[in-house]
Amino acid sequence: MSVPQDPLREVRIGKRDQLEAFGVKPYPHSFERSHEAEELERRYAGLSAGTETEDRVRVAGRIRAIRNSGMFIDLHDTSGKIQIFCHRDLLGPEALGIVRLLDIGDLIGVEGLIRRTPRGELTVNAASVTVLAKALRPLPEKYHGLADVELRYRQRYLDLIMNPHSCETLRRRSQVVAAMRCHLAERGYLEVETPMLHTIPGGASAKPFITHHNALDIDLYLRIAPELHLKRLVVGGLADKLFEINRCFRNEGLSPRHNPEFTTLELYEAFVDYTAMMRLTEELVTAVAEIVLGSLRLEYAGTKIDLSPPWQRRSMAELVQASTGVDFLALDDAAAARAAAAHHGAVLTGNENWGQALEAAFAARVEDTLIQPIHVTGFPRDISPLAKADRNDPRLVERFETYIYGWEIANAFSELNDPEEQRERFEAQMRARAAGDEEAQLLDEDFVTALEYGLPPCGGLGIGIDRLVMLLTDSPSIRDVIAFPTLRPR
Image 1 (cartoon, rainbow, N blue to C red):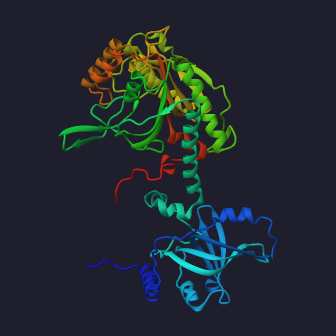
Image 2 (cartoon, rainbow, N blue to C red):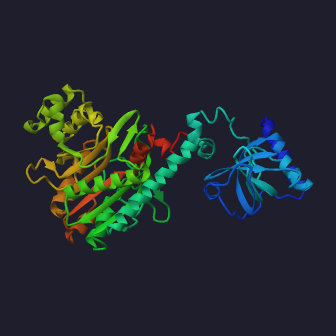
Image 3 (cartoon, rainbow, N blue to C red):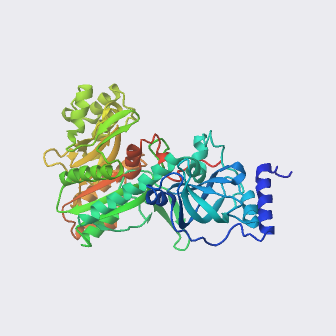
């Protein structure tokens, strides 16, 4: 059975064939532009209505509107819109024949003189028109646009053509990454790259993706975090301050805040502890907000958020006690901690240790309430195998997570640098894994060996770029801020 043909596509194919019959190449190699639309608007901002110039320009872009049988064309490039005037007094018969074969969505180049129409529209009087790419499919209807949200994610190129807001979101994402990179470079941080394929998944508690390398005949894991490789570089003395803006992969669920493939900033600085990372988190986020928004005040989903530092600092146990009345620090027994957490709405398996029970109570009763920026400190040692123990309470570690609008956007430690203690922590994780915890970390012998050569005291910080961009662009889903999110195949 033959596939039914799209009549609109067939019409456009016919026009392409006519162009070729006229000797016009519908997909040429290049076109040299002199200006973009926004640049022309700035340059001729003072040109009064009805004024013509002798200034010749060359512009290119996509046709978004055709009026008066092709006499007026709205041409859009990545910077904005410029009007094109096509008239028989300016174009010869051959060029007019080309104009009549144009459709909305086609990419063209135009050369001509700049003027401002009596109605005030900056316009190029076309002296020549060059077809740059004949579009064989029509764009969505102008007034309804691309309303299917899933189609927007699946055909992002079409979403970007039709929705200026989507373009602006992804451009702001680029600004966020560039601002972070610039901020750190100015402060002496060295940018590095570490492997995405790991022989042992580590650096975070998560379920990895597994692949196979044929030549070596070994299984490899897509990176869940770059932490252990970055700390190896600090051990080696490559730099006292280093960072990586990296892709990580976790074989877990999908949600408006979770994509299997995501981007983080991860950095390490020698000779400081996690309190320095708190200050750096505030500096980074506020610097980015000033560049992207021009303000430290933003609105997300109708809620006003103030990023002005310093941000509040409170411990996990303190926040849970304020919400539930239960002081988990007074509960030394894991069973009592599980019972208290379950009583206050935590979903448990029944095998949680003390720290996991405290974390579950925090997730159930506190997390969603943390709207304004806050550093949550005092994480349990049970769930933090790579962090240095708290100086005052060995059940806890020197770790914080930063929350905004109920989301974790940053995670930082005073890094554990005692190799024997690190081995003990890994072995505890291995026991938890044997008991059924698929996200528990494996023992990385080479990393422990690296620590035995000496890792200086250091602070480490990770910031989730996708979630930060969501906040700074008022985007309801992580799929809005990732150009090509992971979707189930149709």
